Image (cartoon, rainbow, N blue to C red; front, side, top):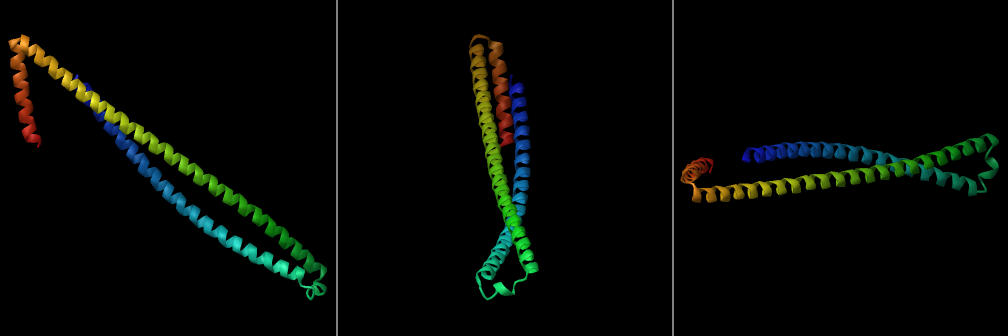
Length: 172
């Protein structure tokens, strides 16, 4: 009966170690992803600053009446093309920001789920250890009751107690 429980505890310990390894690996992936996201966010901020500067330049050229007569049709076409490109980049930037937010949310949710699973696993392990202790205590009480009735069982219990005491001296 004790061997089965010890086997279960050993299996739980192996499972816990595997979960710890998986958790460490996921934390590494999260850190890597956070680094990439920070780089991407920095790139997007630079692109956004460039976009704002270009928009200010376009607004300044549109509102300055002194510049209006000197703008040729070719320059107007180029400015319109530039404006379209800036609007496209602004849209792409917004989509990228949305994507980053979604990824961050997914990572947060995944991390939360993983922590919950690890916590449940630890709770199950504690519960199994408690059951194992309860079984050992019950087994001990049964042996003591049997020893009260049977002298051979009493002698076997005494020998087992001495062996356990001897083991404990060496394990400390």
